[in-house]
Image (cartoon, rainbow, N blue to C red):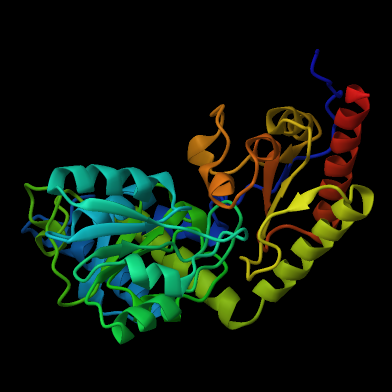
Length: 390
């Protein structure tokens, strides 16, 4: 069957794919542009200009640490979110097992499989319910003493928030001594991380999800956590990650974290949740058979993950794009992949329904007018596809 098509409209693009990466904030771009004017990029030299670059780096590190309420020495600069997650898994020297949720990002899943094979330990998958949330009591029964446990703060596709603090409390009560890593990359733009940071030993974040640079991430390594480096040869980051730091990128990430911290502290994120809910209502009013994933549990404020029975997401996304709506099928790293989302399959969604999934992710920069336009595009596209099947 020939795929339906629509003529592109002349209206400007509506960017509802912030979970894949949010456009660079204006103040972040300015901070990065001004960070190293007249200074060398490498902070490791012994001369006065390198020392000034080192000062810029450490000021940015301190800003990040203050916003996250950690010690600056616990902030390890990395090249992005994937490296941070990989380092959080491979950096733990001798776990008795590696336990991950069934809905982890591939940066954690694939790292866990590789680390498990290298260490000769079992990789245990923690099941989730139909909303994509782990059962804490069941998880505790399968997590052995001495394990590395990696559970994301919130899912990058559905936005479902995981009970990290409750899991840590239950493991201590069991009692089990474990090291906990948390991929907080998806959660960090709209969710306060206080409980996550208090509960975990290792926490990963990425700049580009926050409206910061894609070249920078961080791994928080709590003091006293056993840890070994993966990148060797320079001794940077207190010998936990060798390599010249992207100083301008760190400055940009510090500014982005500061901006997000302010947005969360002032309650601005609640307006985002209301826009998301209004968009959801618009779509469901027109197409009540559309399924909203993880709507019965706490979700990230800007996430709306849906699937349309009998429709292929690739066709939907093509129609969205033709009308100026930027969206995705799920994880950006898996875009274009023919297989159904492992997240939805783990939640018990049928493979056919999972193939019709799409994700709309909003940010505070999106307006009410954009919500209305996006709703019209989604409704019109679903109607067009359904009509073509009759």
